[in-house]
Image (cartoon, rainbow, N blue to C red):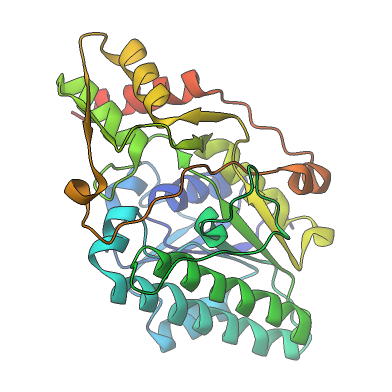
Length: 330
């Protein structure tokens, strides 16, 4: 990237977006943040709000005129705005679908028009491990089949809608030569993440700090991998700045598996040894239609080959960083 690029971040007041905003400002770039604060918080940008190279716009990327303006001024685009969290998806499936697809279409349409004129803007489209659905493989590679459940299970609406975003992005690469990268996030965690939308690690840490029971859904044998947000945003920036990475999909996260019950036990050990685990059913936590994924572990060969990706935070360091943030915030 040139020494001072105009970088647009949609959803820039969100958990991941705010960390990306800070990193790009640290690198000397100008940053335009657009966020409607539906799940993000302006406080996430408290450390940089008022920065001379930050333009903060409280608005929605469903506003065609706004999208046309900010995308038209950008040298780099990081499209992170989306519905987030299992709890939100279960409660608001219509909003989930609309918020994930229409804004992405607007952003890519504007970028495609620029590319058609020979003005190619490196772009990142945030996707999710949810697009793999319930593929039964033990580990997931970017070329694996997407396996979704029945349409009567609202959970799958999120993965399907993000898969549509991926199809749109890759079509713009094929048809217009747009240098777009798609990143599938796997359980990104760290400071500023809220447990309000079902995110498991901040929810566990919050409970442990309060001395409450850590609520584990089902039997706790579900397997996940957790990556620190700093490792993830570094990868995002490198992918966008690597021309040979364009036109491809990348798993981004950690490939070190841990069960949810083990995670709860690790949080208790590091945050509050007096805390306890309590089990609850999915029906009690969400509703009878909820369907979970038992194992979610990425293969990271592609991103390692592309940018020599190597996470620097292990799970204990991640838990400590979340606990330190939450204690300071209370």
